[in-house]
Length: 217
Ligand code: DX5
Ligand code: ZN
Image (cartoon, rainbow, N blue to C red; front, side):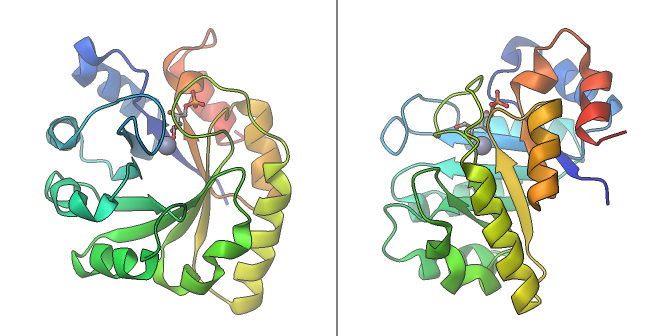
């Protein structure tokens, strides 16, 4: 099956947000990925619910919100109301992750759990039944344009085997340094949702060709 392509707007041209989103839509992206960074949980500052609701007005595609913030529970409602369809939270630094996921599900949103490159993937196994997807970070969170970390492939393979063994309907999303080559590797390891920012919005081959190549067409 063709992977889902979720376009990260982190480094798009915010001065022309509407035309950036429309261009990506025409090129065939499936979702838009919203990177929310607070300068505490991860370095860098990005944007808040205001931009998410602007994207929701501009596009009918699903909005895939990735919270890289401390105390995510304080902001889940705001991002849900802004029009997020998926809300993903990190396992790191959250002693009450079960409650956080319950809260996202109770808002009628699809929950995702995120695991950083330095965190064992087994840490998410006890909440797998509560999520629609696991986001395996393939770079350290914070910035677009970083290099894919190849050691994360083994994590994707392990997770894919665990999901199959338990017969769960959980997808695997990858995020960071995804391009034609790394997309292929992650899909072969079991990924089915590809987040890409730089490769979609600032490449030499054009946005259409970038999306086609991510989908393996
Ligand atoms: C990193 C973000 C990513 C990032 C991906 O913290 O979670 O979504 O925007 O950007 P690229 O595709 O440029 O690596
Ligand atoms: Zn992200």
